[in-house]
Length: 372
Image (cartoon, rainbow, N blue to C red; front, side, top):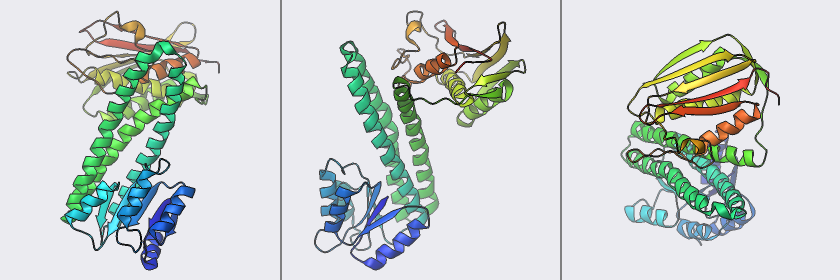
């Protein structure tokens, strides 16, 4: 739900009607005092706040909201038709605002910003919940203290990178709007949405890992064809990496009984890693074949940096990331751990073959009639 705060009822009515027509749930307040009472009783995803109001002005309201632990993470967008100088815009950000729009504004741009900030707020809330769960779990295994510190450092870095990009792109979009460059503003907002999607993938990995630990990762078993399954995974990766050549060799038209979505998640992860860990190559090889004993094997080979023998036993461990002295790669060290748990759930096996400097091959084998 979004809270609109303005001392002029006609402004509230107009903006409420516009946003409700776009599918948003809206609540309103006619003063800063009323707004503070509401935010303490109701959970809001976003607050749109007028600057100039009698009694408490918008800046004072924002500072008060930011001072409460329950409400400090709620994104605030300032709207003003009067206080439009740089001094007031700066004051808005200092008071805790995420954005400052000057009336009249482009409705489409406002809607895009609202959706972006709401998604970020939802992911921040999820991340806080996950972090608390992980910290509690790690505290019960004293031997994992070093892993906890390492993970928090990695998570903070990986999650802050797209967040920082989003903030930068939105600021650039705001400057373009001030120049009436709407197309340029939309471009920057589009880029910020791409960064939000990266953040969404990171949060999804955290959620899946937590669900695995609590036994709440859901599976839906159906019968599906091997060849289209391979094709869907390849197409998904090529959308993000259009310059990569994925050479496929599918031997055997067979049906598999398993969770197609979860298994595709495994294959996409293997393919994405093959691209990521082979930055100087555009070729990946994927083979799928039927093995004796009603097993299907899928192998993904790259021409990347390879993995030293001493590191290979830990590759599928939670939080483990492969690094070398020349390359640093993004990620939380969750992906292969999640893959291993999905394959285990299908009664299968997984592994890798690798030599430093000679690339790597990741594979999994599952029975055609996997037992739930």
